[in-house]
Image 1 (tube, chains in turn purple, green):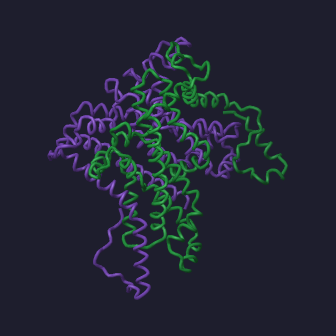
Image 2 (spheres, rainbow over the protein chains, first blue to last red):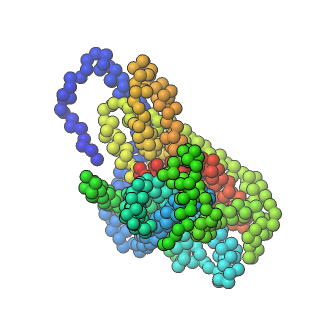
Image 3 (cartoon, rainbow over the protein chains, first blue to last red):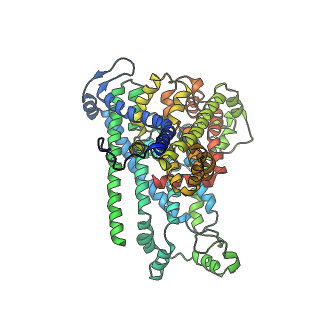
Length: 316
Length: 303
């Protein structure tokens, strides 16, 4: 955050007198009229709730009766709550699978689709379309396809002689199936971002390297990948943040089950606040997640800044 | 990898008559292929099919009869087009209502993000007023706040305003996003100042300069904001889930999830409803694919 303005110093330029001053004041008034609606909505619905949420996390609150201050109790209780522990584990497993797989697959497909191949536009469209399908629609669709009794997936497996699977109703499979569905919809995003980045890889550099005798693999390792490294960092951050916040898909498909095998942190927060009416407890859980996200964002910023400095040092 | 299949393509490129290449420079990787067949298709075609199959299956199952869906093993291809699912969904009093609710919320969000984002972005880009720097940083910072940190108190704020369980509870938070303000501000900064200066020195009001000179020049940025606002508000599920109680106020996404619970045996109707939920975004995407992809990449890369 930038420095706050020092309050008492006088401006070193004497304020313009007469009409100029009046004009400037009118200009400021117009500007405020322009930004006021945005400021009210954005700051009103973020700053107030963030602080309110912090207060809530130190209270016992059921959203109806007046709340009671309980200090760190909610956080202490979270540390011992096996359900929260499971939610954290599930979220981490989901993130650890989804993020590298979506980025890796996205990079691979982008490299392939960056070649001169016929139907490239069609392939790109087909890979990207699932990204615009809402999580609710995805959930309903896949619950239908993967229905253990009459779903098309088991019907296909049956035809090739594989015994029927439980999919979302099997505690051992449900989380993996959710990762699969997320990959279906999220890989296209990585492909599109990487394709845009690959357009910016300077061709002279690739040609120079090729002339110097580098083969495809060398070019990829020493030219292409370093050039698109900032995009990889961005995707890593972005996909991690999205994965840690997964909720809609879980709500639509499994509602955290079976046996809590797909309860993720945001689902836990929602359940505490709007199902069990222990809003303070839910707010505390949300703050734990919020702190983790903040750490990740700050961490990548640091890495990026160091990279920048390294790159600058290398070129100058 | 000893993949030499690209070579004919390149030589073909070089050998093309100069008159035809002048339009598209050889250096630019415009993929117009001159090979009969690339081995990559063996990988890409099945993969693309895998990505397409769920959506194809969505379309197919929505025109199947329930008898076809419910027998085991279920039919993988409809024997004929059966529109009972659509008839049921459209005759259901709630479904058209949910559609209308979603449409209202998304339309208001798009219009108001364009309007308020333009006003706010322009003030931040071109006008001087006390506290603008602090305000800008503060608004930028709110983009980093995750939704679940604010969802419980936002619900309480909406209750204080008496908006819970109304469309107002969905509309107010989506009126303007920091993303819209910033994206437009960045775009306005990139426009040449001279265009506006002449006009407002001649006595045009700021508002008039904004809407007669700046806005017409800003179509790419405005369409980006419109596309992404529509996508996120139309597809949102978690906030409507928290803010709404009565079925009559549901949005399409929320309605669809409960619809599935109530009509478990009528899968054709559920799938017809799903098609109706997906179709607007899908059509918008197919119609404006370039804008869509550009808006995703431009915002993504600036993230």
